[in-house]
Image 1 (cartoon, helix red, strand yellow):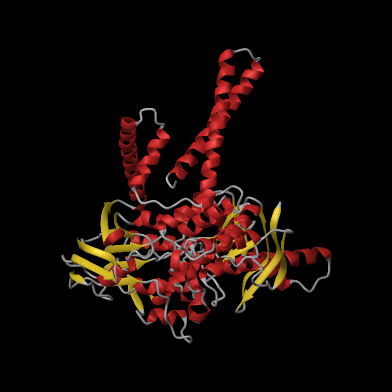
Image 2: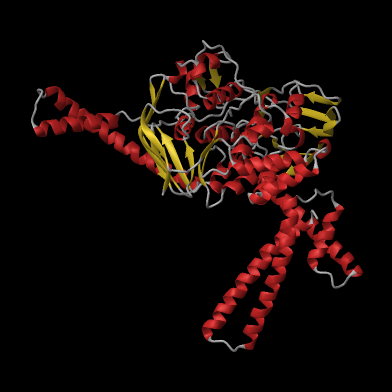
Length: 638
């Protein structure tokens, strides 16, 4: 059944139709990714569907009692509220009870009567499981401690996005509409989020350029192209294949329409204003053919391979670099000699110091100690996360011509600034548009283009994929694969990193940098294997120790002992209750299992009885496994 429907909606901006008479539906369980080039109207369509912006025509309807939550690229908050007030601003009674409970528990001077009151209210609303989910969401998004009390007005752009994401996830609406949800998130958080959103019961519409995220979460892709929607039932690879097929068919249809138009145009010029049915039908067909013939066809694209400045033997030599802010060490004794054609990815959690390292390498920030020796021929191209600065009266082509009127390619060919702009999806008509009228993604694309035409031989890209559409990302990847200089990338886009980097710098706690040969996925696989080995060794060691003291101890106790070696958090009230309940449930399931085994061994039942008992035994074993795993998790916090 459709939870959200749009009928014949249209939107016009600056005398340009983004889409006309567009119809769209979202059914329960659909997880749809909306793709298209920057400026095609994706964000506008999401806002109209979420009821935040009116369409020029048409209507949007939401099924009764269905809640829709929207996450925008630039979240808007009541700046007078704190983070905690913003997250729990919903009128949901359960959320209000959790907010009051957390407030009392975190107050060192709370009264026992207050604690009793909030706990009774949590009990009455069955809010303990929900409270556990809320804590998990806030923890994974890094919204803890003092940050909860901070005014929203004091947050950075990345923090605002994470607060907005926490709010929509905690509200648990029936329909989620997300615009670039992975922007400003670190890689670990993105992987957690995609696992959370891949639920079969979730109804979701999102815009994302993260192709791994899209593959994992979406079960349908909708492309917005020239004001029309095209649906693809499948993953990203399927979309790419079918999109190419569709475009080939469209090219053939448009060519056919143009050939027919020449004949029909001659007929129209020769015909008087006839009123007959036959002539009228042919005239109507002429206008339909004319409309089809006007369809834009993507022409062959420029093979982009910009000439790089000649690079000498010395690139950059870094020795014993150290940097800290107050008590926080972000870089400790880092040394590395960059080599020709190095292709390095820099990864680490938000706030670990990735941008600080990039700023030091490019001379924008000084280290506390250590040296950075740059070769005389090294020319940086540095793409930062800061927004493009421009004069409101400047046009798109003016921004590019400020850097270069012409660009020399690797093969010696010279192309104009206008030709270069066309390759980055800025057609001639748009090149004379005011920069202020561009979408956020188009401005980022223009900013990236300015960096690339400076002929650098050492490219440093800090989150270059934010707000770029998938088509532009493919163009950028092709360019960087052919780039002859050094490449240093910070990106949360795992697909982008895997395609381009051959070596990874991993920022670890205490300012240490781990060197790993391989791409991001290689590192993650190594990390999982390494963690599994360490866990197995620790488990075996603890089991032996436990066996020496109490040979009859169950293996689950051994795991619980192992966890005491590391610092651990305390269990919540809800987790303590769950732990006690699980012990009783596991005990009962063990009894049921034993009874079933005895019945099967006796062999006294009919064929049907034996089949039923075997099926029930299988279900009981599965329940024991599931509850046993959860019991082990909770045992770590007891």
